Image (cartoon, rainbow, N blue to C red; front, side):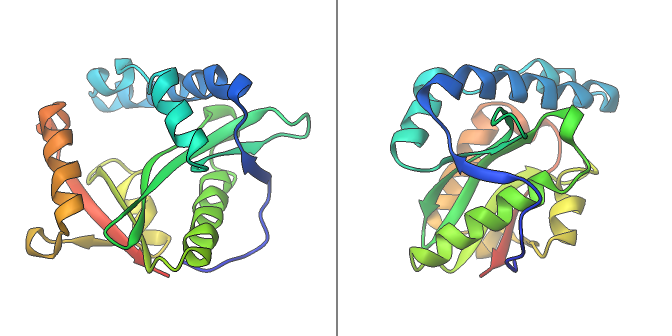
Length: 175
């Protein structure tokens, strides 16, 4: 994943912005309803306590508009030598403008600074703005034997949450 100038400004989230991130998540989830995935559309966003944990760890970043209001966000954490993208959500009003790609590039830069070797994520295999999108950005699907212990734990938690009702995939982009 290569660095390039961002189309939007990206910065750490502030505590006061965390409720806005929940609103972004709800809006970003709505299109799943049209794919016959209403459970995903209706899934509650991460709680304020979860968002605060990522924010305090320095791993909750927002893309902001010209008024400095968040329009997208990304949560990440180190997992087995890579920076794992836990969540990236873009408000539909801002979608299809490269904001998600900018957030991922920003995360890649932060990962490089920490000496991490890749970005990883888990996503829906057949949702056009999920796995196919990430593949266009240089992520490749990992097969089960190639999953690290941490990724196996993440996938088990997702299965417990019911996400395996739809095909899921782990993906990795080397840095």
